[in-house]
Length: 126
Image (cartoon, rainbow, N blue to C red; front, top):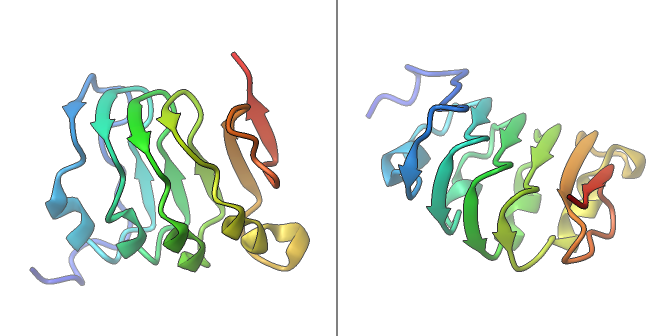
């Protein structure tokens, strides 16, 4: 696949999509924006860390579960990351180093109240 084809891409926000994230999506390594929010997507998000150029990653209000890979902290361009309204087992503390208050680019990190997120900009407790 020619990786130069897509520099910015928005995918299925509020489109009632179901199932797992297609593995082909992880091959689009030039993505800068990925909006999967407000669907019925499920499973884990292993592989998302391959999208190192992402600046906006919105996963909120789906049915994702499992762990958020620690390698997501290698996504140093990430500015917005939303995970609330899912069933994740963790809020990776390694992502804290990417927060803007620590000199990184991550300005918005919104997660559920449980598990406790040590460096979220806000938490969703609904």
